[in-house]
Length: 262
Image (cartoon, rainbow, N blue to C red):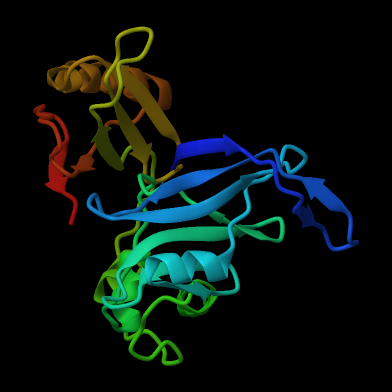
């Protein structure tokens, strides 16, 4: 992030003093620069002191602002270094262990100087609840037209979180097994170990008993139905009277009648 241009041994008697008054030896003095977000702009650091006993690079805010005609904005968790004339952000940083750490200008961050409505922030943030939007706007000091107002009714949220309308009541009464069988084909899905991509289900409306068959191709539905029909009619000693499906696959036989769901 920073580039040291010159460094010369320091022979003076000055020291860097800590809060308890202890002095730290200065070994070298030089000039350096800091890269910014603007390719044609760098921040010049004059009289940079190298202190071997210091474990972190510290920056003097008064010297930085005077030497480069910039200003520093300190927020509860963020630091912004801006050009004094244009107010463009040159560098930014985050609070870390009590110190503001400057970020490398190559790290992408999102900044917005345009105030938008809470509803737009709601959409940008992935449609969270109104209290979450308020918290994020307040916590990160994001520009908003009126962050204290409720988010307007979101059409996408209403549709995505709405429940299915109830089905109308049916007056039909099923009196014996296989009088009505519901069928549905599901798939395609990821191929199973045995090579199946679909399954077909049969639900007896009288007993609610369900049969499930795995199939490799949708064109296998008819053969599976014939197999199912022979099995259940022999097992339950009743004939299949009606089969109801969504027509997801073709089932045709001369014995039962067929109807479409919905």
